[in-house]
Image 1 (cartoon, helix red, strand yellow):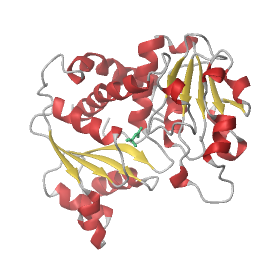
Image 2: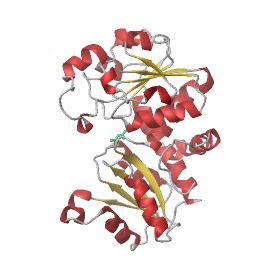
Image 3: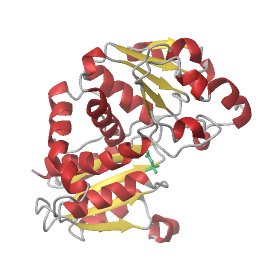
Length: 307
Ligand code: CP
């Protein structure tokens, strides 16, 4: 792999290789083992043009555990506020000997644009990782979610998995569905109101439910999504209270899933909107382990790109 921009089109072997590579890194991520020298001498630039808590921080931790030098560009105080373009910013960071860019951007396709620009300038030695672009993709979130599912459930081919909520605006949902399908999950369900589903949802190879109780019945994994208010425009927006009443995951609704079902959420959570605190903090939630696994998975991706 030169770059990681999307999980679409990546074969099962590559997804599995990333998850397998992440396995031994969990000990390093959880600080049971010291740093590894894999990225010593490499400069990794975190370019987050959209806010982040989990992704930016775990990429930084992952890079440091691999002994890389990490630079977090503070976008709000950078010269982008004076009108400098994304590609001019990239060129200047290349002049500072960047080896890898981790990019989050509100515009779908921004990381791809950077890869095209680098290729046009003959910079095939520099790697780009998409850390979430618009509604398009969030591949490392999809991978850490697959790592989490494999950790708790082992065999993808025996599972029924439900992705619940605002699929329309969610780059996370796209990457999750893509990975679940590739890894052989026989039934991927999408549970959402019609207004929060993309027009082409049937083409994603999922079973669509518009009734949460029906959709949650006997599932092994519940993957909740946040209402992506920042990507919505006006009129059809439900209030948080209206949404919670119909689409919020409560203990009563979760009881319809298998008794050993796990509950996942990529964060940030909006308690009392898409998920009740009793579920978010309950025995079936694996939401914080997802975050921890994210370090090992990001270590795996960065080490594989740099190899
Ligand atoms: N899941 C996720 O992308 O969280 P952040 O926005 O905090 O990075």
